[in-house]
Length: 185
Image 1 (cartoon, rainbow, N blue to C red):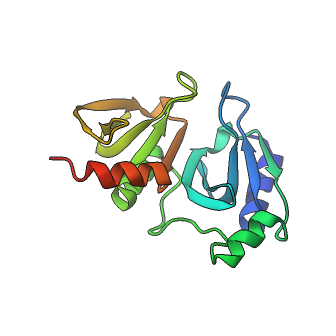
Image 2: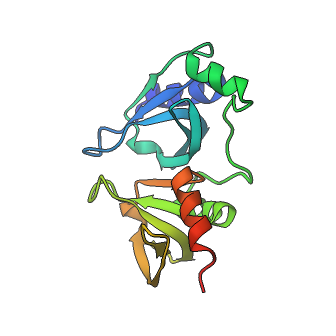
C-alpha cells in the first residue's frame, strides 16, 4: 500500500466524510461505500452506507485498498440525512475490535454480533459465508454456517486466514439470519 492511500484513510477517519474504497488488487471485488471508522496495520473498518442509511460494518485488508475516493463532504445529502437521524458521525462498533489480525477481529465481531460474513473474493467474488466463529486455529477459522433460510449447517467450515479478504457484521442480512436461526443447538 502506498503512503497516499494510508494518508487518505487516516483523513477519512478524522473528517467523517463518506468514501468509496477501491480494491483493484482483487478482481471483481465490490467497491465499498461508507465511512472509515478504523485503520489498523492489517485491517481497515468501514461503516457501510447505502440508500442514505448505515448497514453494519465491513473490515477489509488494509493492504488491498488501492484508492480512497471521496463521496461528498460533511454537507452532502447522505451526511445530512444521517445527521438528522442521529447516525452521523458514523462510529466504530462497541466493544472496540482489534484490526491487527483476522483471528481476533472475526472472533470479536462474532462474540459481539453473533453472525459474521466471511468473503474469499479472490476465489469467489460474488459469494460470502455467514455464521458464527466456532473456533480459531493457528492458520484458520472454523465457521458454523447458516444457510440462506437461516438453518444451521451441521459441519464446521474451514477458512484459511490468507483466503479471507473481507469480514462483515452487524448488517441487516446478518441480523435477520441471526434472528431466525436462533442459537445453535
